[in-house]
Amino acid sequence: MNINYKIEHRNLIVELYGELDHHIASEVREEIDMAIDQNSIKNVIFDFKNMNFMDSSGVGVVIGRYKKVSKTGGKVIAVNLNKHVKRIFELSGMNKIIEVYNNREEALSSL
Image (cartoon, rainbow, N blue to C red):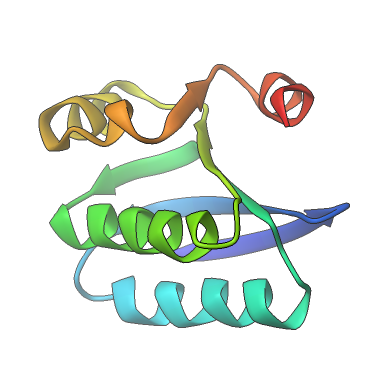
């Protein structure tokens, strides 16, 4: 699992590569939270373009960041969902609370 971060204004874009599972979830959670806190981030955009697997621990990472930023009026958005990740969003109900867009440009223009 590799993670890249990009900050545009007060939006943290998190690019995930590989698998987001219980082996890496706590490290990912800590890195994202540190980036949020150190940069006064309002919104988090998860880019799943290069993800090939996510389990319930990955769901926890996304939901936890949703809870964190929503306390301050922020949003969590997901973009570039592949079939597997889209299915996880539907089964977990995340698609009801996390906005989903086709790409980053759509997501950023919605903020």
